[in-house]
Image 1 (cartoon, rainbow, N blue to C red):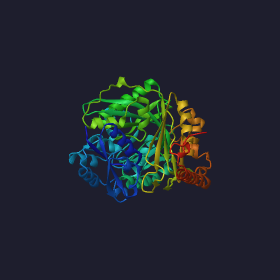
Image 2 (image 1 turned 45 degrees about the vertical axis):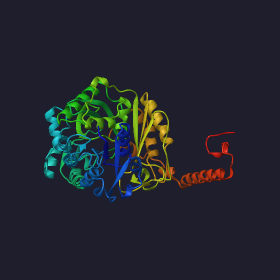
Image 3 (image 1 turned 60 degrees about the vertical axis):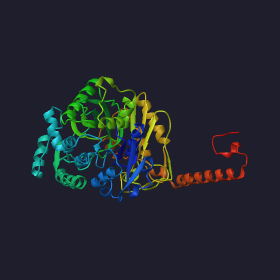
Image 4 (image 1 turned 120 degrees about the vertical axis):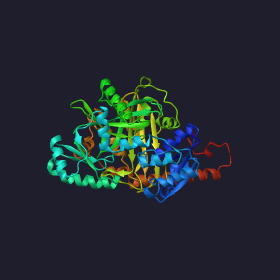
Length: 499
């Protein structure tokens, strides 16, 4: 087992991995930029290493600096988390070349699944169903011909990336040229590669992903599905497990297809196979593979009882995965909401500032993976994800109710958040009935004008109230301690004592 691991990331995922390390008795090293000097993940680690400027390319995306940090701190391994360099084959190779262990799949597996066009070709050869489409197109004339053959609507998307970047839905031929140019620009900016592919767009599809997990000894299984259809502009905002859409037979078929896809690239460690499900024809197609731990991994952990982060580390250290497919089943229901510092009433623009208050909900069945605390600064340099709120209950209805209560108890002042927006999504009858698709949020929640006053959560009155509460509490505590001489007096401390 490793003695020390460097976490090449920040925020809640860095803290999540550090917790797993501490439970395994492994020391941790945090890396940080100028903007993150006082952040929670730096304070939580055993030691910290300063990378440099706040710009990601000078810190969290700088491979040479990360390798140097690992060498200088005498770390044995590097965990990339998700985002940043987690799916960068060059980074995985550099870690190996430095005689360190990359906690994730091999560079070859990352490379094979990183190119969306090539991965589709691989999946076709492996017998995994793929969305009808074409790769390797160059001219707009080629795209136009392909779109007519596939039939509108079609999806134009980047070959070299994911996460909704460089992706455009095209409903008719008159929209195609503009969509191609926009997708190319975004793809080039996000991935440094403007290549595109085109495929059939499943209008009312469900985004369902299967968690796979394997070791370096040839053992590989799936850990069931996550329903990720609640998306805003191709970005997931709510995930859950299990999906109420899948029958046991369909669940088995998708699980088997996911394992087949992972085995096609000799995969080990944690990974996710993403499918688009067409409910009208009860068919599913391979979309892409995420060769890393997912943001939404906690819902899988809660319904299966396995600590994915811990097993990532154990597998990387060479241990065998001791479980078979029949050792796992889904129990209960888990839902995750992503809590962002963003303003839904202003086009979901990021909200920056100091967190004047940050109170997490606490109750049985509630888990919060947070990267911030009261007093922290939310900057414009990085993704505005504040925390992931996850609940677990015996069934979906109970999980929804628990999440609604947890959201009400999640208090954030100083920045605008999407908490009220999450409440509106959960309260909608379509969500309650599972009548959602990947376009549901865009078409129902926003296009139809179902909005409300999002500014109420960060009103001046609330912020002043929070500040005054702290001021009064501190001053009361000080005055009591100064005037009270009896050390055993119940008034000595401000707590839950009542006369």
